[in-house]
Image 1 (tube, protein in one colour):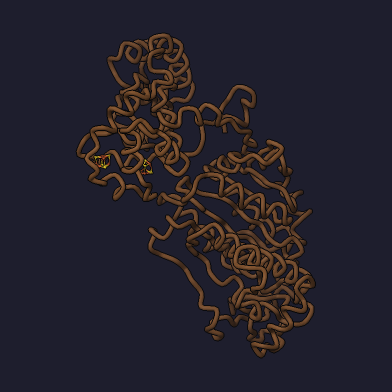
Image 2 (image 1 turned 90 degrees about the vertical axis):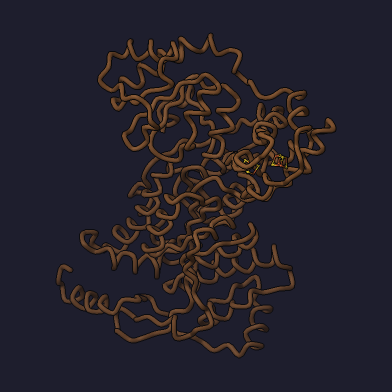
Length: 515
Ligand code: SF4
Ligand code: SF4
């Protein structure tokens, strides 16, 4: 949010996993925290570099003394002299005043800490203490080959540690269980000093809600399926193979004319990629909520704007009433709005709660491999034909809608698997033939890209209702496959619903009732 108002002077450090990286560089003089995604031991880390913590909400006070009602100059004095390591200041103006005054006073005293990463010799000395017990590796959620990198470092070769930097998300779990007290993360950071200095990217400022005018411009194409989908990259920084993967996915889908939105750590990750012209995805694609646009809605909390966009489509485009009408809107989104959330680095309970908020609204969510630890997936069985029936809201007839979307919460093990799953989960029962063919073109094309040019997805016949749904670029191949599997035409339903009582609502509305 700071970057929205201070475009020139504010700098974004990076996603959550860069918090500790940045603190360990010794650069910050004052660390102001709010309520979420804060390292539990941040106060201890700050103390080691002589920095000061200011807590600004009563939800994360970190055991610091409350100085909300104290004279700001006295608080500054207490902090600068080290009488207290930090303070809780619940008044924003006072917190700002104290933060600035303290920073100006302690910065000159803290010169020795700035870029105070370990030296090469210190890294080698620490590495020599390693007993090769591999506790660090067993504790590392990324399963990084830490011990072999440390053995190389002990011989003076730091390249192995440097290589760990990209995939390490600074959780510090390796350090907790090292019997020799080796600060493994600090060793990795010191070995990546030259990389860190050049990590400069341009990130589009978080823009807040999607405007009604934007929804009016694209709502129809989203519902008809001619914009193949809205893909939201959200969630934390537990990326299995570095932040760049989020950008790779976002670029692919923006290039395919999907609408891409992003928030929180993923919005920052998106900027950590440069194409051959040196441009980040934000410089490459427009910031408008349109086909081929990449919109940064803002922080993780701004995910509500993504849900809001889906709700607005139901409200503005289909004129569904908003008040006390959650179920009908969710049913509308599930059956018509081809939106998918991708939380590639999902980690926190907050991310799980956000995912639940989306899937109950009818938006499927894909998480990365670490998301499996949530131990709760919502998977459909595409072959259980009886599970995929719903109703035609106009006639009340029970009809086959197909496995669209097949899953509501899915953990993908690889980037490739996620990229094939995204277009598939954008398919909706209400797609027009043209829209369905566009969605299937993307599904088949990505499948071929990652699984082989001579292959077709084995479930493609479930999504083809009649001849006009067949994607033209793959027509001959798909027709051959349909003949092989004994495919038969299926009904197309322009007003699908999975809720029986919606049929009655539609009838009453046709008679002019305001329901
Ligand atoms: S800080 Fe990095 S190396 Fe250490 S456990 Fe976490 S991810 Fe693994
Ligand atoms: S836990 Fe410590 S001693 Fe054991 S292998 Fe890792 S760095 Fe070496």
